[in-house]
Length: 70
Ligand SMILES: [Zn+2]
Image 1 (spheres, rainbow, N blue to C red):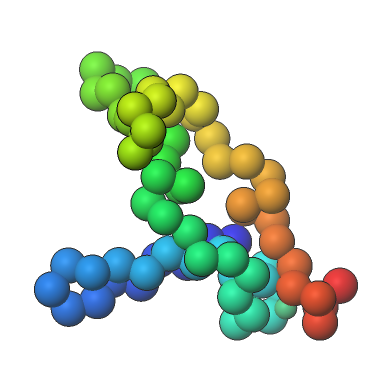
Image 2 (image 1 turned 30 degrees about the vertical axis):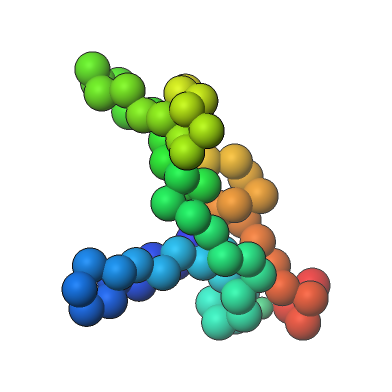
């Protein structure tokens, strides 16, 4: 699962955490890792200028289990 924590001053922390214990951090993520395209006129690009066209997050981002919970 993905956890986003907003900090003071507009900072944000995006992490992939374990779906089972909801504590273990599996991976640090960037905003563009969790961007998806919604049906709209807005075009979304990653930092390399590639347009983001996926409409849902990959399963391995949404479902993640840490080594301890496996
Ligand atoms: Zn776990």
